[in-house]
Length: 165
Length: 288
Image (cartoon, rainbow over all chains, first blue to last red; front, side):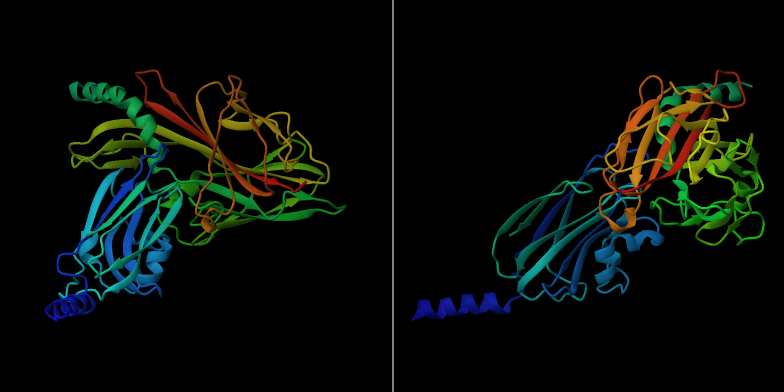
């Protein structure tokens, strides 16, 4: 009886508590070395959407001039142009080739937390006088379910490591 | 004097690095004709679109104007020096084609009165430009001879840039007089006529520099039209042999962009450290 109660408690905690307090989404993004002349650093966006393609949260937005934001076509379409949800806190200058670590605790600025369930992580990169690459991975958030994914870009993205724990 | 000497030493020291980074500030430029092959007994016209843009062949900024077009700001200085060249089938050169700039591209009509091949071009003669590194580490450039540079500028390289933006159009049978090099800058030559390109057929071209086979290292690349609507740019780098000859076998029909860029170091002391020469061609390939 006591065990059943405990179990119920645990299960209901899982269901109700969005994105269990300790859960963190870590994404490692590789901007690959590209032997191109001229080489422009790529514009990159990393973000989360619901499976029905509603923008949830941007983890990173690396850019230079606003004229070219539109070339991150998917991100611009779903989050960028409406600026919803806001991404000021994760916007920054374009990065040179290297490996970059992003992290999200599932909290929004409003201190609300994401609702548990299925999401899609999107990674998009586009380079002037270069190519465009767009990778996606289905993930589950808020269920205290450890997950690891490895994606391999072919052109403008290198190795992408996704870890939820 | 000491300062000048120091700058010059610095410039030659940094030359190698600068040559490879120079292109970082260059954009592609091109002209696209409505037709490259025409037939008929009467004179016919082609209309051309020219633009400075990294999207092949989607325009971004205009290229060329006869003082009647849109207010293009700083581009005006470039447009003033551009030669609006048309070489007719008899080899005669005219410079009176009227180009008109719009905000995103320039437009011109060219009449083909005689049968044969016309070479249409927007030619930029040597334009002085100085590149440097600002004290905050970012790079800068200024046009004009002996320009004023910001305080603390380093990596100063005095350059000239010149380019030929060209395409070929033939009425009835293609001919060779207009294709023959005029002997200025980088030009296309070779066995294959630029208006006789078909899928699966090897095209044999040669690059000439000032009328002679181009022997110095040159970046040659080919990009098929439509970069805006595909994720991969699919830029193909081609290599010329020691006589400047290279081959290209198109696998798809359509318009192609061919760019050849080279640089020549100027023996010092001289007004400039390095001179850049480019050729930007539009070629049309037809299906088998």
